[in-house]
Length: 139
Image (cartoon, rainbow, N blue to C red; front, side, top):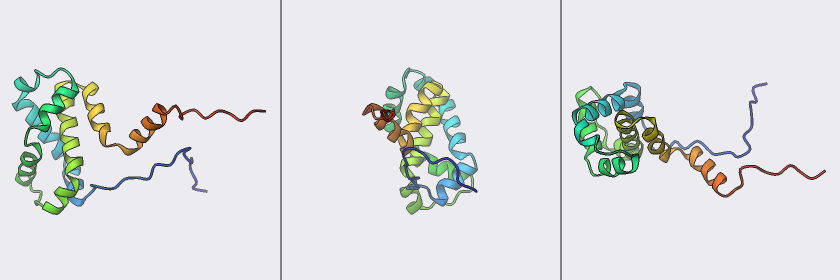
């Protein structure tokens, strides 16, 4: 026993960027807390952005990661520069996704969040290449 379902297309799990630092801030809910606080404090500015692309462009110009690291430190998470560097892309993705959800909603959350999801991106590639529905063999 124990098999399970074998996928048609295997996408190896990407653990790049997953560090003890990332796990700690995720498990403590700090990414979500920071994003909520940031959204609340800057709601007037952020509400000017009506779609996720313009909001993300704005957020990319802000020192979100540096501010988050300070926030996490103030909540008892020891700073680890090596792990932060390794996780920086995922940390930034989570922060931007949660802020987008707080300001615009799920229509902004998923397009940003899924930018780092290798399985989702592989599925998009397959569908865009029209390879998603293999034909049944001729009888």
